[in-house]
Image (cartoon, rainbow, N blue to C red; front, top):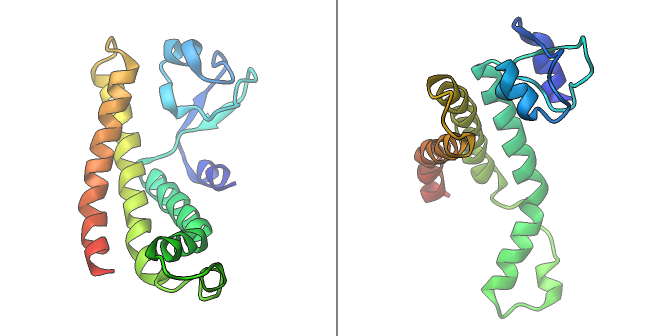
Length: 159
């Protein structure tokens, strides 16, 4: 849903007449790479490409959703790891103690990682068209995670 909203906001579009549903070789041959959304393989469809700002928004939303949904589980896991407590005390509320501190660093982290990865991936594929995609994607992922660490580390120290 979020990608559909962001795609509707985007002014740039790509024709995916020759793109297979999974992207794959046809997408690479068409030169669209990661700009076509998965499942957009029907001939004649046009899919909007996400801008770098939209990648930041989607990354923040994705990270915020992941942290929010798993925070109670992580809280219970931490209580179990502390030891000495019975199962009854592990399952007692509050489950979201410290949530504000965690989410305040996790959302920017997701934005930076996702945004850096996606923009770097496209830039590397355009700069080195003959290079193996796996290596380019790996390089983009490493750079994204390194940049995200610059944001997350101070937040982890504070909380």
